Length: 152
Image 1: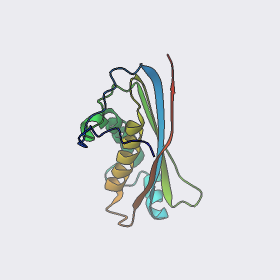
Image 2: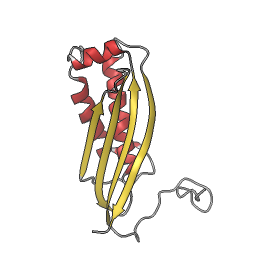
Image 3: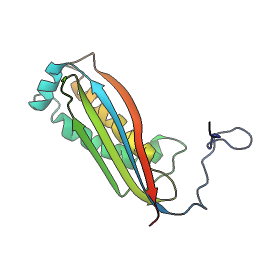
């Protein structure tokens, strides 16, 4: 296992110093899902949820979360991301919405927390918008799918 990078020599929480790292192009992709009743999916697809268009709202919430990750997570660097995308799909079993988010940047540090934040907040937004009709929804399997970097 790697050494924890967010601890200083005294074992206290500390922001990692990336000053000496080179600026490189970085991308991270994260995924997750929110399980729900098929009747809830029908309402979402029919744009019949009282709060409005669920997936459009969740997409915007995910993008906004990626942009504000440095404000939400104490030791994350505030990053000027250059792109974020949030996409949804419904599996054949019609028991969930799959969420995949990607974030890109040219920076000295990675952008995986931004992609994970986008997935998490998109799922939370779906939950918030649909909780009146489905009390059994479950957020699950939020994870980093990939991260890449390449020299400019």
